[in-house]
Image 1 (tube, rainbow, N blue to C red):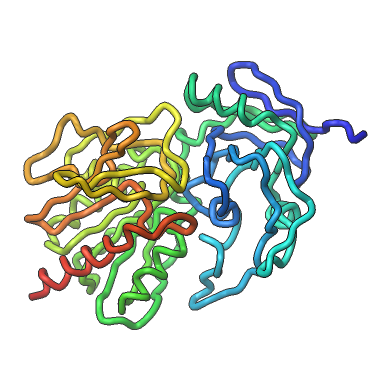
Image 2: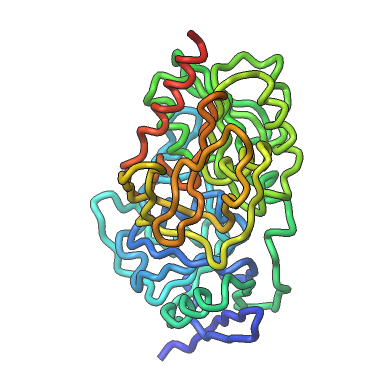
Amino acid sequence: MINKNAKLILEDGSLYEAYSFGYEKSSAGEIVFNTSMTGYNESLTDPSYKGQILVYTYPLIGNYGIPQIISEKKNIKKFFESNNIHVSGLITSYYSDSAFHWNMYKKLSYFLKINNTVGIYGIDTRSLTKKLRDKGTMLGKIIISDNVKFYNPDNYNLVDKVSIKKKTIYGDGKHKILLIDCGVKNNIIRCFLERDCTVIRVPWNYNNFINEEYDGLFISNGPGNPKGYKTTINNISKAFTCNKPIFGICLGNQLLGLAAGFYTHKLKYGHRSNNQPVILSGTNRCFITSQNHGYVIDSNKIPNGWKIFFKNLNDNTCEGLINYDQNLISVQFHPEASSGPTDSQFLFDVFLNFIKKNNN
């Protein structure tokens, strides 16, 4: 009988014993849960999870392994959302060391180890998820060797850690998209390239909008508290004067909203799954979306010229903003999915139509 060699300790003092199957180290972060059944290779490499320990509610993880790391154009990794793992740890009820899939290259445990990421299993994730649902998101730490302090990612500039450091250009398409990288997912770049775009990827604190030649501005997803990124918010406010269409996704939605005069607040336990229902405001048209966010736009006070674009059908929170007069659009969910449904990828086309209208 293998003894449990790891412990999960929450900030309220709760303790769970577990087995380790990843890199042997202690780690701390914000404990969040995701209810998706598949897509762990995409979630682990999603920069929006920086500073968080991810709990998978689906009881069995690892049975299809990890695909081979294949580089596409400009070192974009196929089947992954960035070049490395960003979560601070992975928690699952049961880890399957027997893995098989036609696209499998290595086991999940191998992937965690080469990325220095802790993984534990043997915890009643049902009980843990109920606690987070009832009490709200908590700080936690996984203890395997030495003890570590609790770590609150909201107190740090995580975007600086996941953003690109110098300008990089992808593709040679007709429409030039200036992409503010706050932790962009690879599939967002792919979606633009598939639509005859040139993507100009710049750091989170880029501010040279006046001298840059572009057709539309995109603000990406990313980790952390949106109110902490005042530099980016101020830069977006300046970009309004360029009269170019703007599109934001996830954190980009929040940053665009803050720049426009909206407020944000933290959800009790966030939206993290591939099956979040949203409704297009003013219609009965619904979409199933992929989401990963802990903060949301406050829709109680709406600045002039703006409308709520989408609402979440579970809790009625704001899932998107639109300003028709200025060609500004943003959504809280991920239309590029990966993993998740692709029902709302048409929003990239809406943005490009704004660009075409503006250019004409």
